[in-house]
Amino acid sequence: LAAGGAEPEQRVALCLSDPFEIVIGMIATLKSGAAFTVISPDDPAETQARLLRQCAPVVVLADAATPLPDGFARSTLTKLAETSPAAPFRPSRPLLADHPAYLVFTSGSSGARKGVVVSHRALVSYLRWFAGLEGIGPGRRSALVTSAAYDLGYSTLFGALMLGGAVLQIVLGGALCF
Image (cartoon, rainbow, N blue to C red):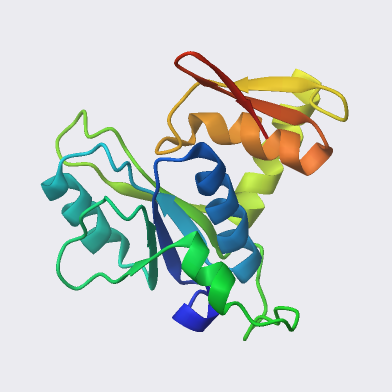
């Protein structure tokens, strides 16, 4: 991701359908210092194009089957793994608490969908509060029942990952465990 320009104050778009790949993309993006945004591959092509233009990502991680609008190059987790350097990642500049962690788009109920930026400071502060409220921690399991395109589930996902819990992604016909 860093070779593609992912660093603090830049964005990476995740247009992935596989829940595991979405989580890997989120973590990889956060480790690069960039902010992620999840764009559902199930959204109409014109919605995806509008959100990608608003997001202005330096890298787009997308499924091979997801069409991308002109001007956006596709990268895949497989391609990144094949071209990843063996040396440990060293960010080009420091990550600050007020740098963006993610960009989430509103539902658009009042018109067009708008992007809302959430900083690392805000995310960690919220997760600390939420973890205390919900008792998330080692040996605990939490259910993730929302789309990754909306940040409602980030409480469960990042709270569990931060504190050693497990996350069950509820899908039709079963559950996946992270």
